[in-house]
Structures are given as C-alpha cells and as structure tokens.
Length: 229
Image 1 (cartoon, helix red, strand yellow):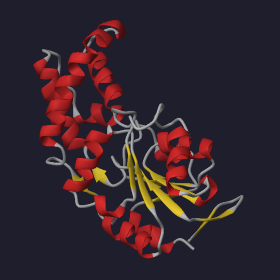
Image 2 (tube, helix red, strand yellow):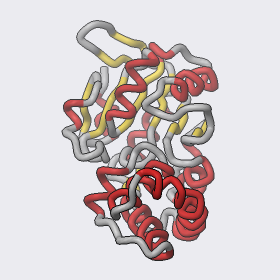
Image 3 (tube, one colour):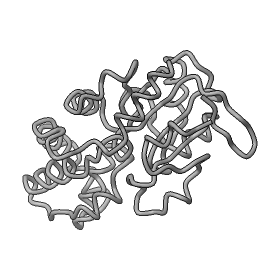
Image 4 (cartoon, helix red, strand yellow):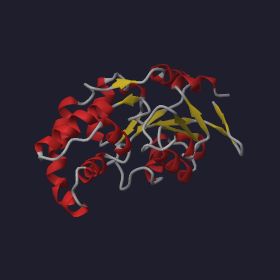
C-alpha cells in the first residue's frame, strides 16, 4: 500500500488507528458518564457541544475541563480530581459502549487493510481499561495485534512517544507506519514521530477545523483507504 504525499511516497507496512472519533462515536458514553459524575459531585452539567471540544486528551483532561467549565478554579478542580476520577471510572465502565456507535465504513476499511496483510494497532488517549472493553463490545478487537491507551506509556498524544512505542511493537519504522486519526493530537504526534498521517473529517478536534491539523490526506470514511494507490 502506498500513500502519496507532496514530498515522499511512503510504502505502508503497518497501520495505527485512533479510537474515539475515528472508529467509534463515543460522545454519548462521555455524556452519560461525565454528567453523572458531575451530578454526584454537585457540579453543573456540561453539554455535548462542550464535551466534543474537551475530548481527545485523555479522561483526566476531560474531567478537569468539565470541572473548570462548571466554575471551579484550577486548584479547586485539581483537589476534586481524585474523587471525580474514581466516580467517572465507575460510571464509564458501567455504560462503556452502550451509548456509542461504530462509524460507517470502519469495518470495511479495517477489513481491507487486514486483507492486504497489514498489521494494525489501536492507539488511543482513552485509558486502556476503557479502550479494550469498547473494542470488544463493538466487535473491533479482532482487527488489532496491539491495543495501547493513554496510560500505556509515560506520555500520551500529541507527544510522539506513544507512536514510536507502537511502531516498535509492530516492528515497523515510523516512515512506513500510517497513523489514522481525527484530531490535531494525532497529526502533531505523527509529524513528530515521522509517521504519515491521514485524518477523518467527522471526528472530534477540540472545536477547530480539521483541515488546520497536520495531515497528508483527509478522508470522510475509512472506506476511502481502499482507493489509496
């Protein structure tokens, strides 16, 4: 498989795929778990539009952002973070996958990549304890040789470390390992790691136009990967 870029043609030997906003629309899960957590703590609820801007940098960032959005200062939010995290974890695990849906074209795209003999890894900023059950619930786990979460390594995307570690696990050099994501976190991390990167146009990008994120190509569905030359 080749991905044509303005400066280089990279022969793709493996693929890394993001989860939230790329393969699965999980906004409903975030909505239920986060707002139940805020209710437990006596804090104001947040809207789905708020959540869409907050997601992508891990659950800890999501919780902290929601607490600040509700009127707490940074220090107050930090002090409440441990209790909020414990409550959020319990709520999320209880409903994981129940209010989410696989995006159209995902199964077809992943199936085609596998048929071409490309090893796949899922790399998300979602905690691994959330990521694996979600993939299983959506019958996507069988596509992936490796699944890494935001807590699998010392740092999370947009740091390049998770991509570099995932390339090591796949046994491929970054230049031959395609990153597929939905946000600037994926684009920035891929650029820094030296991976070619394709971004979907339908995911979560902190309220910013996805065209502004680093990318080699934008696609409206993972099915479009089948047309790469």
